[in-house]
Image (tube, rainbow, N blue to C red):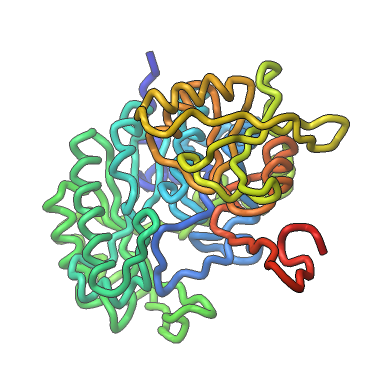
Length: 424
């Protein structure tokens, strides 16, 4: 039975312990499912200290090794969080696997997440089962007209929404998620970014609505103007303005007044940050190869022409099987996929067909087959790009999710000059 961690040791939720207990953020979630007009997605920055920034991205297995090394040097760490650099549930597979690994090895740790709330809903039951105790949801508006000014777009699966429609969808997911989190017994903090001229008149309304949903803590945060974003020209609210707004919002919810706007790779105490000191360790862990199960030496690939990962799991009629031999990636054979139809039975059959593979590289996959393959010990990796890039990430270390949203053109019929198929 999993031991119960002491919730009072979370320094973000309990300012009395911020000088005693620390946190570490594991950057395993590079992708995001919304575009905020204040956000710059240049997440590999080493010189900025703000949310959404990290110096590198880890796989779940690398994150566990990194945590091992952090705890050896900083035993005051009591909280393990995932806060990006994108959104944890735009990278749900990586996020949930990281939490499973940590929960199993470090049951005494407090687990927390920071999300925009768009896609967290389907995972709340498992989050509760893993004893994730604290979740932060960023809610910048409860009026879609105001939300439409803050969010450039919202992506739901493969569908992109803009304007009021995007804001309405995001808000509905956020409200449902917060209610469900509270029913699951999870402590909920609300982050609200104060954007002068956009939502500064609306923040107390947000606080009141969040109180009615049962939220526990409210964090009014100042806009951080980022170059190259639509809100780059809006001035950052002063400390006095933020303090005044917190006093108004406190009528509805307790206020967090000690936020340090942590990076996605932050580590240490809130007032004694050690992110810079651990940067070399983080980078070293990002190059570690994943563990190689002796009984699963191969990687399966869904590809139309044998060069790019460019087929959805459900569309593939066959899978190419690769192995790493003498430092080279070699195609061993091609295996037929189970016939279409048959529902769950099809994916159980596929798990048997690929039972000696540690991963399958695909351009996309549904939640049900991913879960069935995961339970069978097979990792489903979504990416777009050259097969060799995915194989290198699997065998030698790295995060193939970095290739997930990139599109690689294949050769055109005539005048090919090396535009993607390697024939230049």
